[in-house]
Length: 272
Image (cartoon, rainbow, N blue to C red; front, side, top):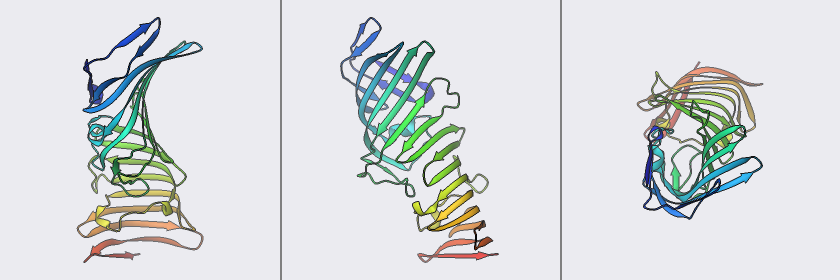
């Protein structure tokens, strides 16, 4: 048995699978299946509740970063590495109101690393809970719902651009991430709230992309800053701060400047 979901770049195969049909029920024994070259143990079962019937295909195995990068729902991000034990579930629900098809993936991500700024980064030996949900029915924009620790995200991709809405205790707002970041096409963030105390970035300014960020309410430690704006671009020795402004009860700022790495030391200066 082999199959391929061309629209999503997902392919699978199994040497042997046995399915029992009993009235409207489907049941199978556990069998091995390969999905995008990752091996899973798969079984099929049926659940009935009131006037609805749910056919569930469950697969447990280690999903790899290489497999995730192949899926067209996700851009080919290179900041994920390794593999982690995961559970995949395909559910087909039939009821009087119609049919619905959904896919979920859950994992504690042990064995997989994420090379991003805190709190999104993780080492391979850490456990961080991940849940991905995707509805194949009535989902023309192909939204993906992602839960990662206490961050709830809705993501969708268009040609060379990723759109993301985020809700969490420390970050609320939306991001637009071009496939090729540049000064003409920067990362754009429009945030209602951002607690920078929970985020720890790299001390090397050269790793940051071109950015255009607006924050209605920002918190740094015990201080609140309203209407914070930051436009920055990459430079040979670090980051050019094209515009930085904010205000709070005691202080306001409207300036430009640079954050540079000189002989291994970080130097920041402003004008305005």
